[in-house]
Amino acid sequence: MRWLAGFSLAAVLAGCATPAERAAQAEREIDEMIQVYGPACERLGYRGGTDPWRDCVLRLNANETYRRTPATTTCFGHRGFFHCSTY
Image 1 (cartoon, rainbow, N blue to C red):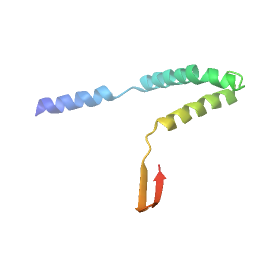
Image 2: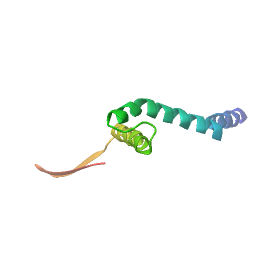
Image 3: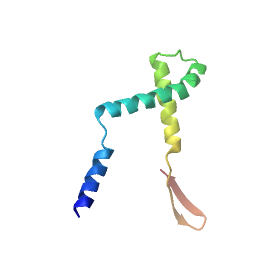
């Protein structure tokens, strides 16, 4: 029983990240977004490094993230008369 408690504590602590590690991860994610979406925003006419360009990068990333989110469709009704909602 003690080894289970020790193992559980070790697993929980291994999953924790320091603020510095979280900041480094956020910087890596931002660098990846800039690398992926930055050229597209420049082709759309935004000058690199400006606030509208950054907004374009964030919007393109949010759009892609939204598309990857699974949707759920619920339908109700009867024979030929259905109403469906997708979330």
